[in-house]
Image (cartoon, rainbow, N blue to C red; front, side, top):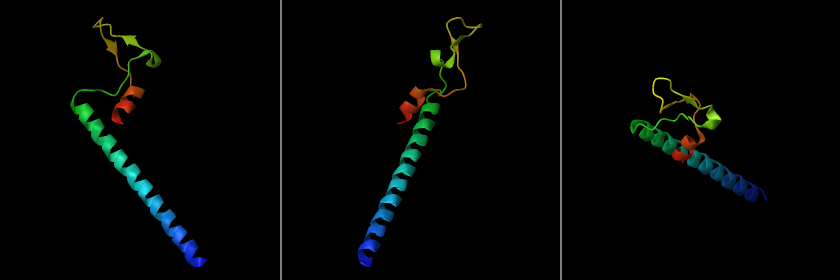
Length: 78
């Protein structure tokens, strides 16, 4: 019985560790994608209606970006 409990604990520990390894790999991949997007000039800040779109006074055809990262930015990282 104790052997069965020990085996179950070892399996659960292995699954736990592998889960965290997968999360770390995904995080590293997302940070690399973020650097790539920033290097290509894709900025994370939104300018949509949910962000309170403000027209730039100096450039009438432009919008001032706010400091809140948009949902599409996070979607692009995945």
